Image (cartoon, rainbow, N blue to C red; front, side):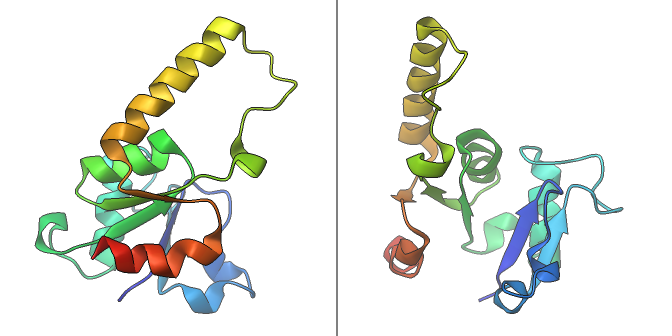
Length: 138
């Protein structure tokens, strides 16, 4: 298996000593051959597949793990990935101090539910669940 990281430019795991050994490559929306495309644009996913050695997304099984339902999960599913949503409300949930109105919060919850139903293959709330979850996809 080949493991790559796709980022919009806010950190490169290959440059982080504690993470570098886990990844074969990192692709960023800031890379010269990718800019100005960032997630959720399909181009960044296509470039990642090229770096992984795949000719076409349809020619292999691949998984995208992400925390953003739109930028990661919906976008990856649209280009053929199986998806694992990292749903960590402790870090990514709405703050108790949100400035969103009740109507905006309700609309966001409805959109989130719709995306989850259509695009999330499996979900995890802890990164330690990832190995088992990946196995369950195949």
